[in-house]
Length: 341
Image 1 (cartoon, rainbow, N blue to C red):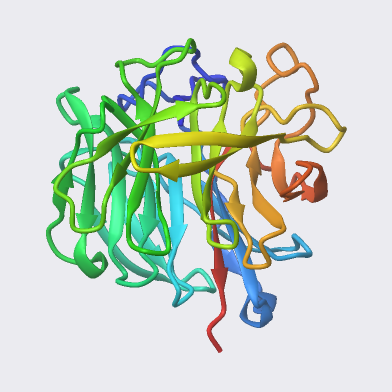
Image 2 (cartoon, helix red, strand yellow):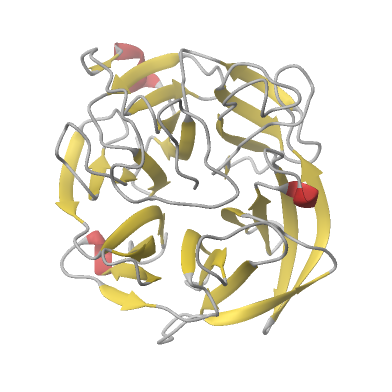
């Protein structure tokens, strides 16, 4: 995801996630959780990059049922089959927490936290079969090439993986067989113009392998979601058609080292225009809805500007099914937790 500057706008097309490049606007409210969260069968967690919050919305009502505060640049998120949610944070803000990984319960209780001491964490994914936690790092703490760290059963010391012609790693996602997909850029400080790169770490593999796309062009890396119902990937593009602040999704069928784009869907905002910056929409269990946040920095940057918010989209058409602003400033990472009882 892109760096946000002091006025909560995206620095583009060049990217920088160096701590200090982003002005934190820490939320001074206290964390809270509504009793309604305990009765919610599904909760959408949305990280607000600028406010330093993680907001919790019941699905499908999008009723706000909790807020966790005080994070240093909450970024990518992921969830496991037990209903737990992981968050990675990117930066050294006033909280002093730096690059951290947090684990929360379905109702937002903090279960675990540990530092990412090697790189700049951007996103995460959970292998639903093994519980392994994959964390994508844009690049290492010295500014060298990025990598993905995998924590066995989301514990202990991770093992690092790289390759796949990716210099900066952005989003990661597992398929139902334990293969890990990642997207990123084949050059540093990625710009539009075809520097997007998709790659796969086969189950049991030692390095990522590049995937060559055909049937279209993805300009800037967005979410990676496996759709088991269709046996394909849903891959986000934050510069759809080469247009900055224009989010869409592509369906990609992978065969060996080739990925074929079979369909594209523009994501729309609450007023029917193109959603500006949808970094990590996630697929609901029903398979027909996507959930996540749309960050709209300014009318001068988003042609169809409206307030930033949390959304449910029709996966086929990209049209909003429901949305809520709820005071969100820069919603980026997202994950859905499902109750297990």
